Amino acid sequence: MKRLSPSLEDYLEAAYTLGLKDGFPRACAISRRLKVSKPSVNSAVKALAARGLLEHEKYGYIRLSPAGLRAGAEISGRHLLLKDFFIAVLGMDGAEAERDACRAEHALSSGALRRLGELAVFLKAPPRRRLLRAARAAMSGKKAV
Image (cartoon, rainbow, N blue to C red; front, side, top):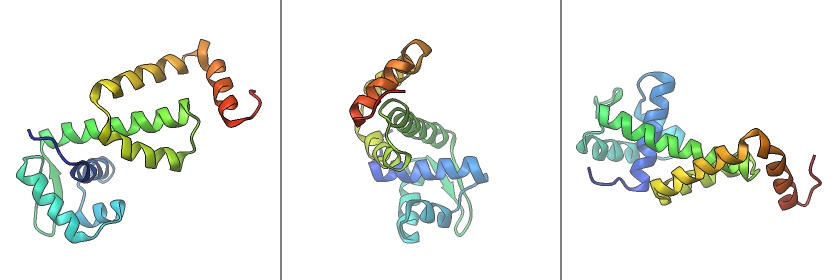
């Protein structure tokens, strides 16, 4: 399958996440989540349907195909991995971590993401947590606890 644009990945991720929460996402819910117009959502839904990633009933629910579920889970996983890394390892606040994760999830290779995940697991392991807290405190100019 041809690689999706960052914009289409955002629409698919939103559909996937809303589908987990509500069962079947609707275009209006995706519009609210992404803060975009409904016509923009309809255009993206048509493009994703053309790639076999979802099905859409006119004025109805959106259903992700098995391929759409796999792709949505992968995109969502990248986002969550990066957000966790930014918060747990770099000590960023949640809102900033959310924004940066959304941008970075489209730019990093799967190999880089895998290595970031491995680094996060390594640094968050009990013997290194204290070192991680001290490093974050040093970056922020505060004393380590």
